Length: 246
Image 1 (cartoon, helix red, strand yellow):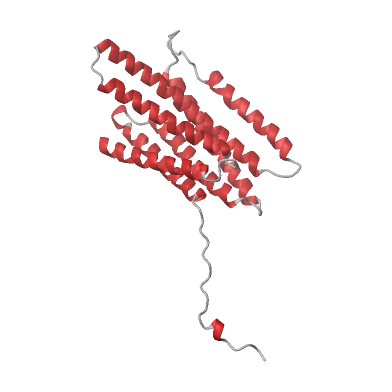
Image 2 (cartoon, one colour):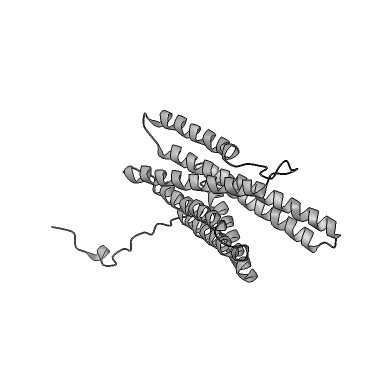
């Protein structure tokens, strides 16, 4: 199973690097928010993998190893919430971009209110220290917050699809980007939900599902930004020998 993880991780990394290269080749200004998300996703993954290799490969005492594991868990959950928040904000940004006309200002205010609610709601719904005061926030709070953000992003992305389908002048590239983002956030929301229903020994199932949906979503982004090389129509070799009309 470890080799399956490694193969999917390599595929995820290649897809994400490809998206970054394609964005930098001419789409970074139009999709700058997506560029920020991709850069953060790449850098955070590299940092976490480096931290993991560092404390696993070093010969340290048992207490130092336990402390490293605690810090890795803290960094992992903090980054997880940041990534999910970036995805949620990305959906909001795409919705604002897809809106045009005199209603855009009012839609912008509504979307800003939704962002404020999404930022405040986790602190109101989920206890940060359910078992009493502790030096660090419980992992359940991070997991519940990530689940909330992904479910919210999936719902908002459905609204975005409705807006794009109703617009006859919709941007086809924006539509493909929203499809890929919908796959990513929906897969994340489902995987977080399954973690509550599956025993610890089977946690690899939602994890693999999460990684595969990310691979699919990022591959769709590659398709959205892949350069389309137009082909000139083939010339009829007999056209030059045709007799001019009388």
